[in-house]
Image (cartoon, rainbow, N blue to C red; front, side, top):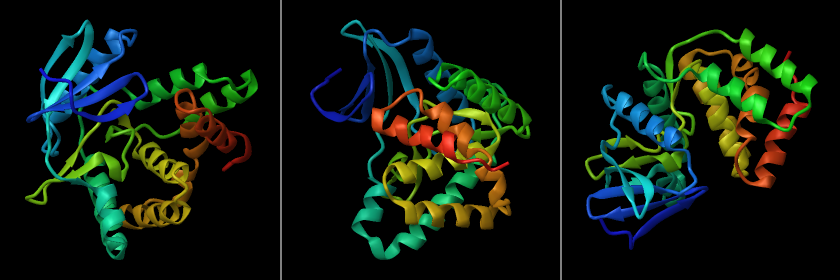
Length: 249
Protein backbone atom coordinates (compact mmCIF):
# COMPACT_ATOMS: atom_id res chain seq x y z
CA UNK A 1 0.00 0.00 0.00
CA UNK A 2 1.60 3.25 -1.20
CA UNK A 3 1.14 6.53 0.63
CA UNK A 4 2.88 8.90 -1.75
CA UNK A 5 -0.09 10.59 -3.44
CA UNK A 6 -2.13 12.82 -1.13
CA UNK A 7 -5.66 13.67 -2.26
CA UNK A 8 -6.68 15.74 0.74
CA UNK A 9 -5.70 16.62 4.29
CA UNK A 10 -8.47 16.92 6.88
CA UNK A 11 -8.61 17.39 10.64
CA UNK A 12 -7.11 14.22 12.19
CA UNK A 13 -6.87 12.35 8.88
CA UNK A 14 -5.08 12.29 5.52
CA UNK A 15 -6.53 10.80 2.33
CA UNK A 16 -4.26 9.09 -0.19
CA UNK A 17 -4.74 7.48 -3.60
CA UNK A 18 -3.03 4.22 -4.45
CA UNK A 19 -3.98 3.14 -8.00
CA UNK A 20 -7.69 2.21 -7.84
CA UNK A 21 -7.90 2.59 -4.06
CA UNK A 22 -8.40 5.47 -1.63
CA UNK A 23 -6.81 5.20 1.82
CA UNK A 24 -8.23 7.36 4.57
CA UNK A 25 -5.49 7.30 7.21
CA UNK A 26 -6.47 8.53 10.67
CA UNK A 27 -4.17 10.08 13.24
CA UNK A 28 -2.86 7.65 15.85
CA UNK A 29 -4.97 9.23 18.61
CA UNK A 30 -8.24 8.98 16.64
CA UNK A 31 -10.92 6.88 18.31
CA UNK A 32 -10.87 3.30 17.03
CA UNK A 33 -14.55 2.99 17.89
CA UNK A 34 -15.40 6.01 15.70
CA UNK A 35 -13.37 4.62 12.79
CA UNK A 36 -15.05 1.21 12.95
CA UNK A 37 -18.45 2.86 13.32
CA UNK A 38 -17.81 5.00 10.23
CA UNK A 39 -16.87 1.94 8.18
CA UNK A 40 -19.88 0.01 9.43
CA UNK A 41 -22.31 2.81 8.61
CA UNK A 42 -20.89 3.24 5.11
CA UNK A 43 -21.18 -0.51 4.55
CA UNK A 44 -24.83 -0.28 5.59
CA UNK A 45 -25.47 2.49 3.05
CA UNK A 46 -23.88 0.28 0.39
CA UNK A 47 -26.93 -1.98 0.75
CA UNK A 48 -29.07 0.73 -0.89
CA UNK A 49 -28.97 1.46 -4.62
CA UNK A 50 -27.09 4.73 -4.11
CA UNK A 51 -23.83 4.99 -6.03
CA UNK A 52 -21.09 5.22 -3.40
CA UNK A 53 -17.48 3.98 -3.18
CA UNK A 54 -17.34 0.45 -1.76
CA UNK A 55 -15.31 -0.26 1.35
CA UNK A 56 -12.55 -2.72 0.55
CA UNK A 57 -10.99 -3.13 3.98
CA UNK A 58 -10.34 -1.61 7.38
CA UNK A 59 -6.73 -2.06 8.35
CA UNK A 60 -3.71 -0.57 10.11
CA UNK A 61 -0.94 1.24 8.24
CA UNK A 62 2.16 2.41 10.08
CA UNK A 63 0.35 1.71 13.36
CA UNK A 64 -2.57 3.94 12.33
CA UNK A 65 -6.09 2.84 11.45
CA UNK A 66 -7.20 3.24 7.84
CA UNK A 67 -10.38 2.76 5.83
CA UNK A 68 -9.71 1.65 2.24
CA UNK A 69 -12.35 2.29 -0.44
CA UNK A 70 -12.68 2.28 -4.20
CA UNK A 71 -11.23 5.24 -6.07
CA UNK A 72 -13.85 6.97 -8.22
CA UNK A 73 -12.54 8.67 -11.35
CA UNK A 74 -14.21 11.91 -12.36
CA UNK A 75 -14.81 15.55 -11.43
CA UNK A 76 -16.58 16.77 -8.33
CA UNK A 77 -19.74 18.77 -8.74
CA UNK A 78 -17.87 21.66 -7.08
CA UNK A 79 -15.29 21.55 -9.90
CA UNK A 80 -18.01 21.53 -12.54
CA UNK A 81 -19.69 24.53 -10.92
CA UNK A 82 -16.40 26.43 -11.05
CA UNK A 83 -15.59 25.34 -14.62
CA UNK A 84 -19.07 25.88 -16.06
CA UNK A 85 -20.75 28.75 -14.17
CA UNK A 86 -23.27 29.13 -16.98
CA UNK A 87 -24.72 25.76 -15.92
CA UNK A 88 -25.02 26.65 -12.23
CA UNK A 89 -28.84 26.48 -12.20
CA UNK A 90 -28.76 23.07 -13.91
CA UNK A 91 -26.15 21.73 -11.50
CA UNK A 92 -27.96 23.06 -8.45
CA UNK A 93 -31.16 21.36 -9.62
CA UNK A 94 -29.19 18.12 -10.02
CA UNK A 95 -27.68 18.57 -6.54
CA UNK A 96 -31.12 18.90 -4.94
CA UNK A 97 -32.54 15.93 -6.84
CA UNK A 98 -29.64 13.77 -5.68
CA UNK A 99 -30.04 14.83 -2.06
CA UNK A 100 -33.75 14.03 -2.22
CA UNK A 101 -32.82 10.60 -3.55
CA UNK A 102 -30.58 10.07 -0.51
CA UNK A 103 -33.38 11.16 1.82
CA UNK A 104 -35.77 8.66 0.23
CA UNK A 105 -33.65 5.76 1.48
CA UNK A 106 -34.14 3.89 4.76
CA UNK A 107 -31.35 2.02 6.58
CA UNK A 108 -32.73 0.81 9.90
CA UNK A 109 -29.44 0.19 11.71
CA UNK A 110 -27.82 3.59 11.16
CA UNK A 111 -27.13 5.78 14.18
CA UNK A 112 -29.98 8.12 15.12
CA UNK A 113 -29.54 11.76 14.12
CA UNK A 114 -31.20 13.07 17.28
CA UNK A 115 -28.93 11.01 19.52
CA UNK A 116 -25.84 12.38 17.78
CA UNK A 117 -27.06 15.98 17.95
CA UNK A 118 -27.98 15.73 21.64
CA UNK A 119 -24.45 14.49 22.31
CA UNK A 120 -22.86 17.27 20.26
CA UNK A 121 -24.95 20.00 21.90
CA UNK A 122 -23.81 18.72 25.29
CA UNK A 123 -20.20 19.07 24.13
CA UNK A 124 -20.52 22.74 23.10
CA UNK A 125 -19.20 25.70 25.05
CA UNK A 126 -22.68 27.19 25.21
CA UNK A 127 -24.10 28.09 28.62
CA UNK A 128 -26.46 25.68 30.38
CA UNK A 129 -29.59 27.72 29.63
CA UNK A 130 -28.88 27.78 25.88
CA UNK A 131 -28.02 24.08 25.85
CA UNK A 132 -31.28 23.29 27.65
CA UNK A 133 -33.23 25.31 25.08
CA UNK A 134 -31.51 23.55 22.19
CA UNK A 135 -32.07 20.09 23.70
CA UNK A 136 -35.75 20.95 24.18
CA UNK A 137 -36.12 22.21 20.62
CA UNK A 138 -34.38 19.13 19.24
CA UNK A 139 -36.57 16.77 21.21
CA UNK A 140 -39.66 18.54 19.83
CA UNK A 141 -38.67 18.02 16.18
CA UNK A 142 -40.53 15.32 14.25
CA UNK A 143 -39.06 11.82 14.14
CA UNK A 144 -38.21 10.55 10.63
CA UNK A 145 -36.06 7.71 9.30
CA UNK A 146 -34.47 9.32 6.23
CA UNK A 147 -30.83 8.62 5.42
CA UNK A 148 -29.04 11.90 6.22
CA UNK A 149 -25.56 12.27 4.71
CA UNK A 150 -24.47 14.89 7.23
CA UNK A 151 -21.99 16.69 4.92
CA UNK A 152 -23.86 16.90 1.62
CA UNK A 153 -22.10 19.50 -0.52
CA UNK A 154 -20.87 19.69 -4.14
CA UNK A 155 -17.33 18.63 -3.13
CA UNK A 156 -18.68 15.26 -1.97
CA UNK A 157 -20.27 14.37 -5.31
CA UNK A 158 -18.07 12.90 -8.04
CA UNK A 159 -19.43 12.70 -11.58
CA UNK A 160 -17.87 9.64 -13.23
CA UNK A 161 -17.06 9.56 -16.99
CA UNK A 162 -20.30 7.63 -17.58
CA UNK A 163 -22.19 10.48 -15.78
CA UNK A 164 -22.96 8.38 -12.69
CA UNK A 165 -22.99 10.62 -9.60
CA UNK A 166 -21.04 9.00 -6.77
CA UNK A 167 -21.56 10.35 -3.26
CA UNK A 168 -18.46 10.20 -1.07
CA UNK A 169 -17.49 10.88 2.58
CA UNK A 170 -20.14 9.09 4.64
CA UNK A 171 -18.41 9.76 7.96
CA UNK A 172 -21.40 11.68 9.36
CA UNK A 173 -24.30 9.59 8.03
CA UNK A 174 -27.28 9.06 10.34
CA UNK A 175 -30.99 8.34 10.05
CA UNK A 176 -33.48 11.02 10.99
CA UNK A 177 -35.28 14.14 9.82
CA UNK A 178 -34.14 15.26 6.36
CA UNK A 179 -34.68 18.88 7.41
CA UNK A 180 -31.54 18.71 9.54
CA UNK A 181 -29.52 17.50 6.55
CA UNK A 182 -30.85 20.36 4.42
CA UNK A 183 -30.03 22.88 7.17
CA UNK A 184 -26.49 21.50 7.28
CA UNK A 185 -26.04 21.88 3.49
CA UNK A 186 -27.41 25.43 3.68
CA UNK A 187 -24.94 26.34 6.42
CA UNK A 188 -22.07 24.80 4.41
CA UNK A 189 -22.81 27.19 1.53
CA UNK A 190 -22.81 30.04 4.06
CA UNK A 191 -19.47 28.94 5.51
CA UNK A 192 -18.02 29.19 1.99
CA UNK A 193 -19.43 32.71 1.66
CA UNK A 194 -21.76 31.64 -1.14
CA UNK A 195 -24.89 33.25 0.29
CA UNK A 196 -26.69 33.55 -3.04
CA UNK A 197 -26.36 29.83 -3.78
CA UNK A 198 -27.40 29.03 -0.21
CA UNK A 199 -30.69 30.87 -0.65
CA UNK A 200 -31.30 29.44 -4.12
CA UNK A 201 -30.58 25.94 -2.80
CA UNK A 202 -33.02 26.28 0.08
CA UNK A 203 -35.77 27.69 -2.14
CA UNK A 204 -35.27 24.93 -4.70
CA UNK A 205 -35.21 22.11 -2.15
CA UNK A 206 -38.37 23.35 -0.46
CA UNK A 207 -40.15 23.71 -3.81
CA UNK A 208 -39.15 20.30 -5.13
CA UNK A 209 -39.85 18.43 -1.89
CA UNK A 210 -42.97 20.48 -1.02
CA UNK A 211 -41.40 21.36 2.32
CA UNK A 212 -42.25 24.54 4.22
CA UNK A 213 -39.13 26.68 4.53
CA UNK A 214 -39.94 27.28 8.18
CA UNK A 215 -39.41 23.59 8.98
CA UNK A 216 -35.84 23.82 7.68
CA UNK A 217 -35.22 27.13 9.42
CA UNK A 218 -36.25 25.62 12.75
CA UNK A 219 -33.32 23.22 12.40
CA UNK A 220 -30.73 25.96 11.82
CA UNK A 221 -29.81 26.82 15.46
CA UNK A 222 -29.80 23.12 16.41
CA UNK A 223 -27.58 22.07 13.51
CA UNK A 224 -25.28 25.08 13.92
CA UNK A 225 -24.75 24.27 17.59
CA UNK A 226 -24.07 20.58 16.98
CA UNK A 227 -21.61 21.38 14.17
CA UNK A 228 -19.74 23.98 16.21
CA UNK A 229 -18.01 21.35 18.33
CA UNK A 230 -15.42 20.60 15.66
CA UNK A 231 -13.78 22.78 13.05
CA UNK A 232 -11.82 25.98 12.73
CA UNK A 233 -12.22 28.78 15.25
CA UNK A 234 -13.72 31.20 12.70
CA UNK A 235 -16.23 28.57 11.58
CA UNK A 236 -17.13 27.87 15.20
CA UNK A 237 -17.75 31.55 15.86
CA UNK A 238 -19.93 31.81 12.76
CA UNK A 239 -21.98 28.74 13.65
CA UNK A 240 -22.51 29.89 17.22
CA UNK A 241 -23.74 33.23 15.90
CA UNK A 242 -26.64 31.34 14.34
CA UNK A 243 -27.45 29.85 17.72
CA UNK A 244 -27.27 33.20 19.49
CA UNK A 245 -29.16 35.44 17.09
CA UNK A 246 -31.51 33.19 15.11
CA UNK A 247 -34.83 32.37 16.74
CA UNK A 248 -37.45 30.78 14.55
CA UNK A 249 -40.03 30.16 17.27
